[in-house]
Amino acid sequence: MVERKAPQDAAWTAVDDYIVDRLIPNDPAFVRDANAAAGLPDIDVSPAQGKFLHLLARSVGARRILEIGTLGGYSTIWFARAVGEGGRVVSLEINPHHAAVAVSNLAAAGVGDQVSVLVGPAVETLARLDGVFDLVFIDADKPSNVAYLHEGLRLSRPGTVIVCDNVVREGDVLDTASDDPRVIGTRALFEAVAAEPRLSATAVQTVGTKKWDGFLIALVD
Picture 1: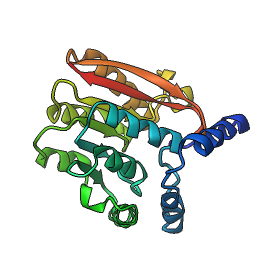
Picture 2 (picture 1 turned 45 degrees about the vertical axis):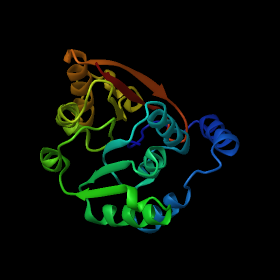
Picture 3 (picture 1 turned 120 degrees about the horizontal axis):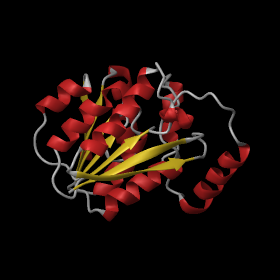
C-alpha cells in the first residue's frame, strides 16, 4: 500500500470484506494485529491480494520465491503456503525490527522453516544471491524498482513470473511532472519493462481496502 490522498470508497472495502468472508477463511489475519502492536505501518497487501499472489505462485508451480520487501511477513506467509514443504521463500527486509516481527509471525503461522529473512539493503543482498527463482515479488522502496527488476531478471529463468506492487499509485503514475521519487521510480519501472525484450508484461489496476493501486505482472520469455 502507498500513502493515500483520496478518501476511501466504502463500497471497495465492503466488497473486499465480502470476498474475505466467503473465499479466504484461512487469512493469516493475526499478522495485521501483531504488526500494529509492534508499530509497523499498515502497508501489507490486502487479504484478497495475498490470496491472489498465493494462487499465482501455485498456478506456476513455484518452489523458490524471492520477495523484496518483507515488512511483517504477511505476503511471505501466503508465498510459504504456496511453495509447500520442500519449497523455499527468500525475503529481503532492510529494517531489523520489521524483520524480527516477520520472523515471529512466520513461526506463529507454522512456516518459519520454509523462509529465510535476510536483513539489509536489498540491492546489496541481491548482489550476493545466486540460483534461480520461479517467482519474484517486488514490494519495497519504489526508487529502487529498476535495480530490483534487473536483479530479479538475473535470478530468473524462462517462465519465471515477476510481480511488482504499487504501480498505479492512485493514478499518479500518469504524472510526467511529478517530483515524488516513488512516482519517478514507478514510471522508470514501466519504461524498463517495456524496453526489456525478455519480458512479456501487463499491469492491472486494483481497488479495495488498499484504495486505488495495481500490480505489474511480467513473464520471463
